[in-house]
Image 1 (cartoon, rainbow, N blue to C red):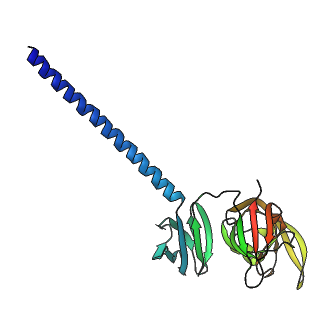
Image 2: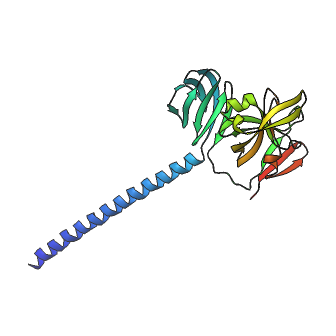
Image 3: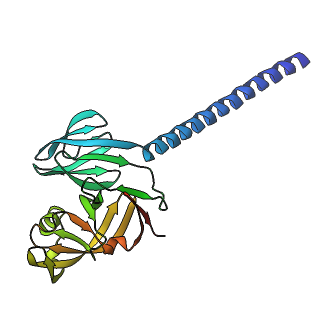
Length: 240
């Protein structure tokens, strides 16, 4: 009888060992899966892409994403880049949750890393001795000329139409330009972004016609950030 009891005890301990090891294995698998999900999320947040717009068609576009060429149709996603719409003039892409518009030949570098609001944005003087920077207005791509002498952001009506701005619903006004008096409208832009700096509800002026030829980044934006001129570069930082 003692021998039989000993036999039962051995069987019992063996069964318990298997159960314990089985539980440990399950926990290990769960922990490993959670770790992989965490790493994947981290990689996604810090991923970046280089995109070039090669050709445009109605609701189709040829893009080069990180060196790989792809014909993308409306609604399709390739390496995290989704095509919302396109025509022969421009393409609307969704990049890390934001819709942005780009023209043929545009080259875009995107980053998913959450920006440090205290980080400086450096803008270098170009060959014309001016400070220019790519950014966006209401998530539409725009190229800005930093103009500290301009009291407001200023853009022409053609640019306003391209980004879908209903500027004629703004407040009518007149402005003096190099070609004379121009009719304009005071408007409020939902969002203006350069680099990691983005501001909301920014006042701007839209002028009828082709002037200014570039979007002027004036004081309605610049007065709300820190700006330091340092030789051939300009340091911009968001105010807290």
